[in-house]
Image 1 (cartoon, rainbow, N blue to C red):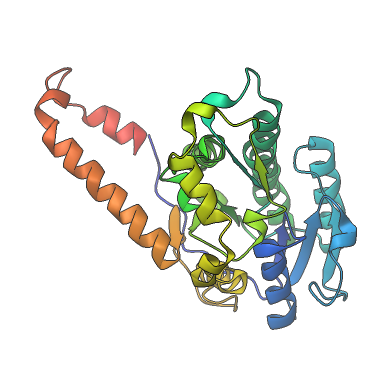
Image 2 (cartoon, one colour):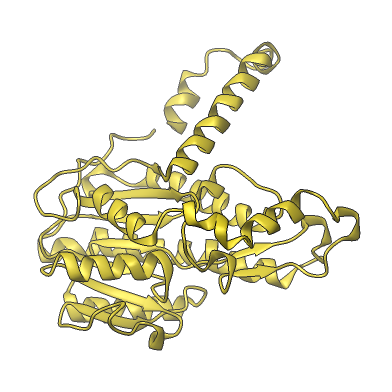
Length: 318
């Protein structure tokens, strides 16, 4: 049975942030924002290629540690966390940001598609392995320093709630991450003080459509002129991206979720999910409303089987 939620989180003044995928985009913006706005806080900025973590995008200084980290490699994850602990003694906030996208026709992908599996190793399994190490640090290591618990922020996407054409494998990775995070969060004892949140940005002005986008090839001829082509056209239209959120805005929002803007002393209830962007909020709400309509339409069929008194199941699932 699911226990009570942990108490609201109080971000310490000297919080240690551990951020994956800092070579560009949201990760880079978040590391920069913390290092330049909250000088008493510490930042562990990581990327597969540490040469991409250069100043001024990510400033140098005694409170900034730049590390190589390939989230698809468990030994690399352990090495990065070990170095962070050796430098700062604890980790308070872990931001799972590393990832990329893969677009194309789902049917066209060959059996055992290597590109899709590699993307899932990064977007899903990499994030899972980072979460597992973070949980152990929050529970077992942090209390030794006098700081209880911590926060895991998974940078998911509105694509972790709703699917769009041409991105079946990307959406699968984000749906899987959100399901894993929700289930794992319900396993945690409230006295551990551990919080898990999936942030779900909509369109963001990052490298999503360029270096962070891979294409499933060859394309399936039957889908020519269809919905995937339309989506690829939109993704490739740089003019259309001008209405997207800036990575800096997402960085500020993450700090607001964790600590009321990043400052000390403001206790925050950290929710399981937060859409970021009016597009994400609107489209996710629209999907939920459609789901409710479908549920009401088929309610009689849905409830026509099993024992209607399922309180014990409800209490277990939460």
